Image (tube, rainbow, N blue to C red; front, side, top):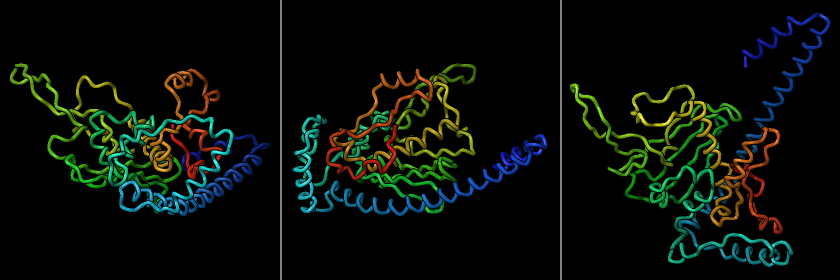
Amino acid sequence: MAELENKMNKDISNMPAEVRDRFKALKVLYDQANIIDHEEEKEYRLLELKYEKLYATVYSKRRDLLTGKSEVDQSLVKAFDERKTVRSQHDKFSSIDVEICDVKEIQNTTKGVSGFWLRAMLSSKHIAEQIKEKDRAILAYLVDVRLELHEHDTGFTLFFDFEPNSYFNNTTLTKKYHMSGNNVIEKCEGCEIKWTAGSDPTKTKKKKKQKKGGKKTNVTVTVKCESFFNFFETVDASTCEDEHEEKDEDDEHEHGHGDKIDEDYELGNCFKDDLIPLALEYYLGVIEQESDDEDDYGDEQDEEEKPDKKPKKSKADEPAGAGAADGQKKECN
């Protein structure tokens, strides 16, 4: 910011005298606009913190229902039935086709709703791309995904709560995003996962030829592999990748560190703004998302001509106006 300030002042000083005063005045107006912008960010953050606490109250009740900790509040059931009657009278509602929830997966559940978050995550295209087959058995123990906005900066922390399991000893995994402003990411801080022996899906063993004493021998080395749980690594904008980490010589060229931190933040934001508030919609399969063909089509267009690719809820919810999360969060693409 200081560098930009100095450059603008220098450019104005070198302008012809007849326009210099005009640009000095324009620079002062520019500064005034920046002050207003900073004040707006502060006010918006306070408002965001206020309402996130209200969301958290609702999400806590959702968690208790899913885990079977609480009994079903019959007043909520009654409210659903009343709203369903109103919806069914709307002409558009009856003509909308949505995916039917497969009750076979939950009909034998005596307490709570098992596999809720795994199914919701697999229904989100962007998140599902990060989940490998070996991750699914572990994510089946996921019982809640929570959000906490930071009060000391503009970042946030994601909490992934798990049932006790045989894969790792943690009960909660965290990912913290330290930010100094809107979309200004300083650090994506992960956590240590205390894997039990042989359970780490982010590592695999591979045989590799190695020269020793003038002879080539096959040795078994541990290399990094694709897994959703790589999400819990720390990515710091001010550091380079760990040099001690062994890379497989056949690995493809990796993205630059800037790309990596952007991709990490995009996934974190997908949980924050999309999956957490719209978990039920994803679980039930009523979120419309772009197809691969639409992705290819969009890549061929100029930036100004690209179609809106954000996933959206099915219009089945529109007649009732009942989706509490409608419009409250920016959905992830």
